Length: 178
Image (cartoon, rainbow, N blue to C red; front, side, top):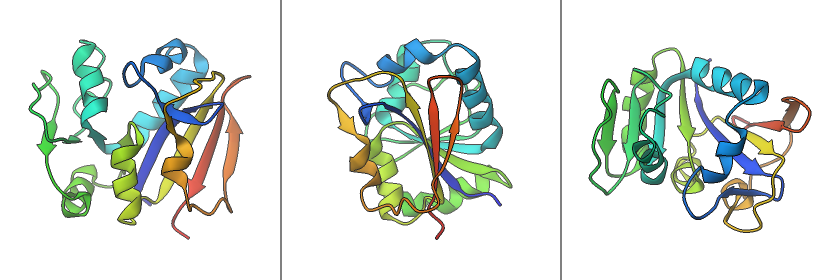
């Protein structure tokens, strides 16, 4: 059954975002079989993607890094951004609950995938719109930044499924439909 899934990477010390910019610390883990398996699963599930301004900004700043092809992408932002050639992007401002039905419609029989830091995911979680959360824990310590606990606070850990993605990467899947 299609749903809304929040995919996020976290450091082993529990951070999901850090200065100087979103995703910089993730680049070290962008290659290899673990990353390829995660990316393939992520993209295969996605009928539509929702992200915030900072996540979108990271793609604009790295030309050629757009992984979503023609998958409809919804960017929640108060900023003006350029589009990306060949991409199906809708820029919106407002309450996530207002746009969620349209994003689900774009996704069809596949999942709506949330990606990026915790602000947008927190809004979806607070609105009760997230069905699952997939946290990929990478073997790196950040020491500071936005803590994963800021996003998952209050989530019942019962029913968490874990799997290994290679020798050093752990993935946790939280079922929030309970």
